[in-house]
Length: 150
Image (cartoon, rainbow, N blue to C red):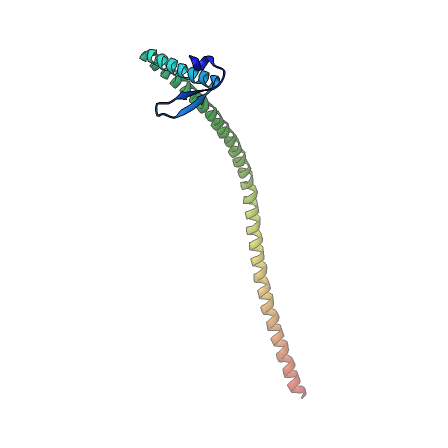
């Protein structure tokens, strides 16, 4: 009581024999802290076990509802992703189908061109063989004429 009514700090003796200086504001903080701890302990002791279970169930319900909202959000994003990809795939399929006809006609023209080139190659080989034969014949005639002339 003397310590609380005095304006100057006093010495508070501890059980171990050492001393510590306490001011009035420090004592008020200490007393309010002790009162809060005591009140909290008394309040927890007076809490009904059923009320604690109800509180836990309410907390669990809040968590489940929050998880449900998160799941709904993720599900909506997934549905949007699926629909967008479905549209993109359908568009890609249509483009590929239109390419099929153009590629088939391109293949047919390439096959026809190949056949034409093979025919031309065969004709050119025959023409070359005929030209070689004509050159050999002309060379033989010249050498014969040259041997007759000399």
